[in-house]
Image (tube, rainbow, N blue to C red):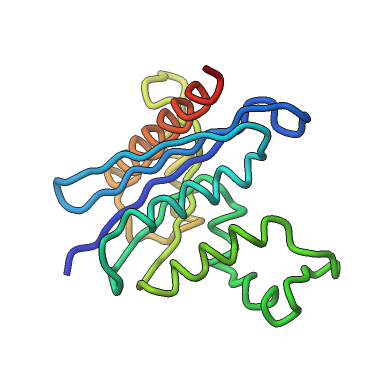
Length: 181
């Protein structure tokens, strides 16, 4: 069975301000086929938009039991699944290590239900990498990528994944622009 790759990003213009504009973007890819998704919301947070991007990607899938690789520049999203934070949250009645209520529970619960229908691996990507810059140290960025995700990805894979993550970022910005109008 083919692997579906999901590249996601979320952002918020004016994050932490009372009035702001958030956007999310997701690119689903299976082989040569791609589907782009984006949207936005007023008065939200960056973390909510990061989560919404992943949720939207999973909701666009037509069946369960798929092999999925999720690439996100959000350590909040990636580390939750890679380090299994959600297991402690569920065990502690959605309280974090500081015994405070976990933020964005509604979205985390929705995302967990969707993820559990599939075989999913999460990968962390450095966001906002200028691939056309002559001063970008790609070797150093690739080294960090391997440190986060292991050595299964080649340097060419890394560049492609980064390109796709940038595309998800562009889509998130479209979502922000859409909400501003």
